[in-house]
Length: 459
Image 1 (cartoon, one colour):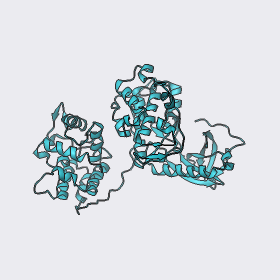
Image 2 (image 1 turned 120 degrees about the horizontal axis):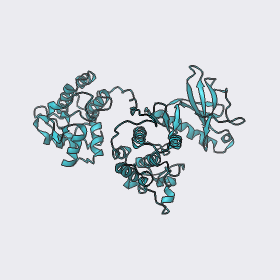
Image 3 (image 1 turned 90 degrees about the vertical axis):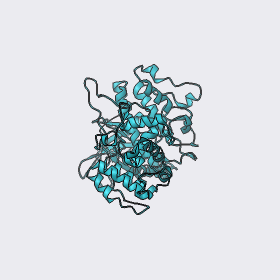
């Protein structure tokens, strides 16, 4: 942490804000419009970061617009709750200046880390990118784009966890719709569509920036700016700078940085799926440290909603007590009950197509909640789509899916009773019986049911 001088302009050390609830320690830095300060909360001496507008903007004729944008940033931050997103503590007006008090992240940003240490190992770089990618997925789920992902906006905590900061350019978007957005970008990390106020913006806009950030972490070289690439100044393949980059990572970087947005992975989930699975340990030079998983957000209560009046309290109790096999069987029974197929004992494709959204989400949310995000239809759907699954019967994808979720071992399908009914099972391992509601009748029915169910848009 480096405090910089700011005498005569801005806030002074020792100055109180918001009724002396916050006490300024010193200036941390400034950008085009904003300035950040390190401060303490008077109540408990906890450190926070205070972000506000520069003093000179008070006399700017556009001050009201800047203030509104600043307020919007505070609102956007408050909506995006994730362990790898900087958390807002408060928003207030002090005099005429709007202020955001936010979590203080002890550590340094990835740009400074790479400048100091040099090129990162692939394992370490992927650890940071995956965590930030998971955070960006939450941002997108809120209908927002970050639009300024870059190494300088990713802080690394002292425990090696990565945190996405600075939502000053974040804006809402409507997929596949031409929209107008305010200008603002960082050369090298911004995609070509961000160079114009009007264009098509979607999740692939942030995919480009994530891929460009990974490029920098593995090469210590800022990528060629998109406007230069448009003028026939090609992007140098990262392998030519760092020959230790694996083929899979190079493909993911170049695919994520396609100039034509339609050729990029259309979501962060799909781009992350291109990256190899993290293996081994990494650490600073001279030692190794294990990859530290991000803490999971507290599970939210699930409303046991049913469009057919089905009672899900028993499923809730079974999952809450960790009785995974019994819960899997209860899931199958409840799905049959919803579809009116209890006597037949299995579901047809048309039953799955017509399965009520409310019931499907209730079942899925219960599994996701009690497994801490390891199990559930939505988890399986993400894995299925990352392998190229589209709902069509494809034996190759079906086998790959079975391998990924642990239903196949050494190219052999496991019997139902050989599955792992505990949280040590692979991600997406459960539920199993509900996918085909009739696993006891053979794999073909599960295979067809899986493709139909996991292609549902409402998961």
